[in-house]
Length: 351
Image (cartoon, rainbow, N blue to C red; front, side):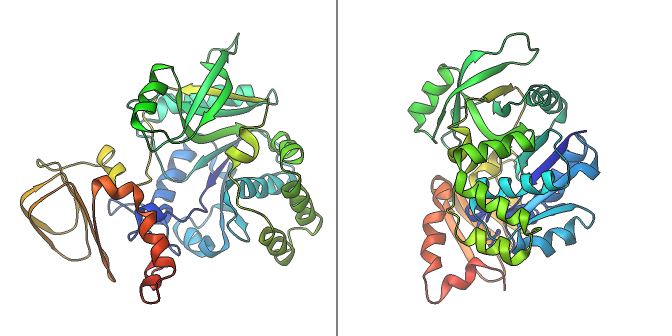
């Protein structure tokens, strides 16, 4: 038996204003069909039994996710404290329920159109994880990408069918020239997916993140009392699992995943995964355009465009957002400014 945990506690700021704090990207649809979390759950059910799928999220999203996936198993974090705390909390739940089977951890916003090679890669990762290893999935790059982190593979693991390597290092999101250099050197995209036994990962928390480990143990001793969990999480710093564990562990392997994968993270990323019209536009609204090229247009009302190019235009019930595609990945500059604005801070949530 294999477990799978979908990590769905993020805020999805880079797809604002369609994505908001109280209804982030994992809970919305980008194509007027199912939401990203529903699509991810469907993909996960092709890999493991649906009874072994869990979703880890924050308390404020519990009702929304239950509405979209009524029968799913939920791990509800008391507060959002980044991926290390969220994953640690999920591990403590699994161990408390005597579920120490190898577990796949994956995000709620991946685009994986063909599951065949993905499933094979996961199966290879599970075999390695059974030997008390943390196995991350590195995606073979299809282009020089400045929006992803990279993994530097080291020595190849012998006697395995998969392309598995010791991890030499993690690299932050690079410049374009550095991304091209990484590809020449055989680096892989950091997908954020990893496969491990909960007990082994829990020991890693004890070794590398003792404050988090002690807090999780306190929560377990209190039988996951919500107030105790909240008090513990309030004192935890926000630390990613990459920084807290992955970059420090000597038991980390990477398997090369040679399948189409993308992270639906920014408006311009939709260019890679959604169908365009004959002028290169992605349109999800009633629309009429003349001399409109390579734009992304989402709306609640009809949108009429004339003589524009390479723009992102997002019309919602309470605001209209417009930027160039070039600036789409920098949208946090806007949301951070809204945070403290006396009038427009309300736009970070749906009312």
